[in-house]
Length: 503
Image (cartoon, rainbow, N blue to C red):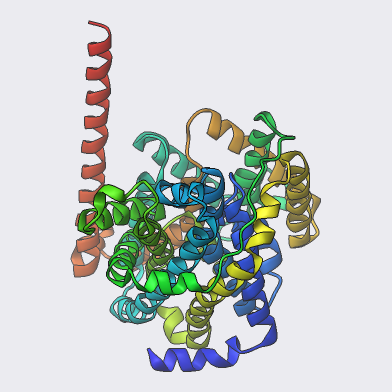
């Protein structure tokens, strides 16, 4: 662990890496504070720019956006009672009542301090757990990686907003997209239709920007109140909020642990961890009847949990190559584009890069408190800008970033085409995150499955002959069985409700 950190200092301690980390925090808080955007959208929008930078500087930029965006939603939740991201939905339960009592500055300061300290706690777990998990997985071969990829694909049913069937269908669509291009084994062309632009497949950035950013902006345009600008009180949080948070240290540690736990479970997410931490904090509080009326402990619990989730989500992403949520899936895709394959071999072959990631994450949480206190008035002012001015600027940013990937007009066409696909998916209730996971994990699954069958003398029995692979097979069967059972129960309950309404 210490050797990994030491090897990362040389790559990390550069003005570019440190500067971009600080800038990423500012941008992450900004997109997190704007309702409808969030850390995932920030990563998607700026991914084209990050992959053109030195690897650690670019990854530090994206990780800082992830960290800042996970906290930024609390600003609009506290001031407007509109969570900028689902992560901040639990924060408004006590943050908004604090603002109504004239303590908006205290509420935002507590949210910033709790997020920073919770994120640091998640970083400690990330630094300690990732190398251990990677050492365990260092003996994995193609059969184990095949089963791990399948496990990662099954997690889409956990992060899907719709039903299990829709999640699996969206994942299958992503897997189909991953087969377009040149076959790695035979060098033949698949689904290119004699179009040379498709020989390398669809560029993941163009697909993701179209699915998420373009479709989201289209839905924002179809919404109402494009020219309205809310009236927001001016606040300036101070460092005294740090002391207030430390007074709730048992709640802080407990909530951070809850956030790390849920973050390390693929698909669980920060919204689940923040509500869980809030419920536990309320149960353990001696003044639980005050929760929901402006209790400081409620803000501490939710913000510590949702930022600790970031560190937890990065553990399986770095050590196993299985993203913990949609945002970490985008970080995984960025590492693949930069030439780094997340997993146990990366800890052996690129210890400097891994150590740099650890240091970038820890520094991001330190910057979160400092930058948040300094720039909070700026974020509050941006919240008052009407959407009619923000949406065109975001779309222009999408076009510039996507075109800059390969100086290709075809990538722009792909972006707008998948923007239409994203709109259709949203209108019909299909989740978008499984498409991204299928597109990222598809090549990993295909290459390791074919390698496994090439080295096997007994066909598919190779997945049951090896202990770890067979354990993962059993795990996948249990996950799928559990998901099917829960899905059938929901369907049965829904039918029962319809019968009760229509006797």
